[in-house]
Image (cartoon, rainbow, N blue to C red):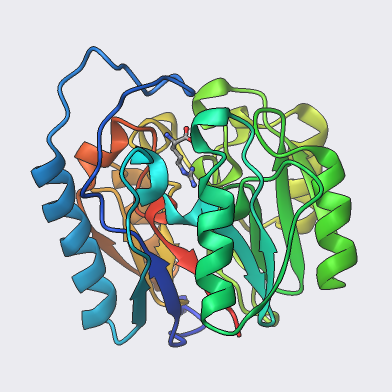
Length: 276
Ligand code: ARG
């Protein structure tokens, strides 16, 4: 019997934002219910566990200062997309989040990165996921198709547009996880019902060997996972996904971000990868 093996861990560099101002005070996705109680202390504890998990795995974590009045700033993945040290700024769809785009862009500029101000609406790595030599790009709820073209022009990498059709999976990173971003051995997991028929066919063609997540995985936001090529930080409720990962030689690392799920995000949403 051959035992499948993961391509192997590579050290990562992440940007995160501590949820000290966390609350659900508006509703811009079906997970958010502003009448429900949120516990900012619990959100901070879960967030710190997530950050410490990355540090224990040997990754670098930088943080951006949270800004009062921007409760969704904890979802750092939406703040920008960084490929080969080039920063494509976010331009948020909803007014409630719009100040986050310039805030993240300023952080990158202050660190010495060259940043590009987006002309088109895009929510960063929420909808733009680097896998191997290509970028998978979601549209339908937040990021506009025109932003896919803008990202392709900026990064000089093929950008493949995918149509999201279920409002619960409004960002690509809630419906699809990059398990291996290695160019030699790219791998993804996704929840097929979140995509249009044409987009499912494209994913089948590009990733015939992909993991198909179950509904239970998807509702736990299990696809909002963060992989370093070996270790995959994943919601504890995504048991089928964890099993499928183990079968392929990956190590699932359950981290509970239940409090942050009330805003419609999980581990990946809290994690922006800086690719220099
Ligand atoms: N409340 C946020 C929103 O609706 C959640 C963002 C989650 N982030 C993500 N990368 N999916 O915009």
